[in-house]
Length: 472
Image 1 (tube, helix red, strand yellow):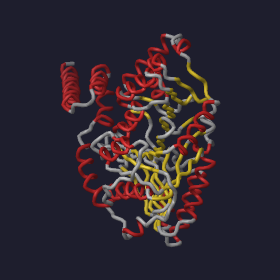
Image 2 (image 1 turned 180 degrees about the vertical axis):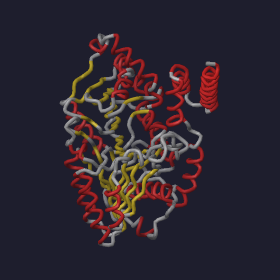
Image 3 (image 1 turned 135 degrees about the horizontal axis):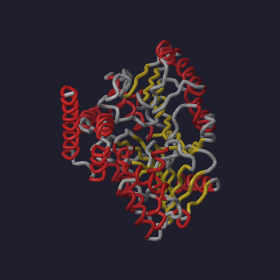
Image 4 (image 1 turned 90 degrees about the vertical axis):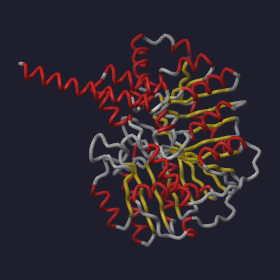
């Protein structure tokens, strides 16, 4: 009995010590106060689970090392040109993106908006088929299903024909890829790598830093960026989800060079191998592609600033006429929340489109906890009803547009590696506005009075999920 009591006391003392030191580390990291408080509450009320969650998701001591290492690498792989094209539209926003992420605008671009898998994947496959020099594919999710197998077969075909093919997938998002699938790619000559694999040990120190970017670059001339991964879900073939609404961009012109640069950075970081092609092959001169102004920007643990979040914030806060946002996951930080409320209160038309059918219950309930104060400020909120909406699109004042991989949530702002394209001009913004208004035809507007009538249980679940929102 005394022996059992001693063992229990020792175990309790060890656990209490671990929780205490975890809490001390969280405080010393000087995070955002809301995140610090959330972690401390989890540790206090759920010490065992909280400590395990902190080991998996909470530690940030590697972030500075990652940022320093990749910043050196970034400038070695593709140095920047400090010159700026003359642009009256969004000029301060252009300067912000350049200063916080080192990405200048480009003026020789053709932009094609691709809506849904029925447009996205045929464009992918056509570009892959036409590749002559190299194919660089980066994705968060790559599935071993029908479309995944189709893409893989074409990659193998091009590799056998002498095209250099490189595939970079996220180790967590694509964790279900089979060895047989990967072996077929490698046997055909495709170079394949996982970004931060997580299959070795559940408390792996890098598990919290995921590469959520979706990039496809063909011959340095054609690029794709947006929200769609590679899987049958994105063609609406998942019976549990149904119709899938997404948005992607096809780019031609100088902006493709910056997608290429991001891929090369991530490829070298994951593999420690540089690409043997010369600079002219990787970054060929582009003939006159178009007149669209495009500025690529990336953010993540490898950047000093939360670049995409800052651009979202500035765009929303500076809006004078309209802000239209589509996001599958909505967990704003205080800056974004304040910008949305302040902009709506100033009389700007602010509309937010979210999924009516969530694919993540905790994220859904956390998102619901922010809606009442937004509605009270005059933000119009809609829930998409046709299926699941996965597009990540922002349009401001009919001039500035953003399409990319970043959600309007705290994970995309600070933990994930993300990439967005910002397009300046009325033509792209007008098309995206039309698509947004078309989506509203398949959406239900949330009314403040109705929302305030939700049950106590509903309200309690929201509040509980909100405590975890800085961790999601």
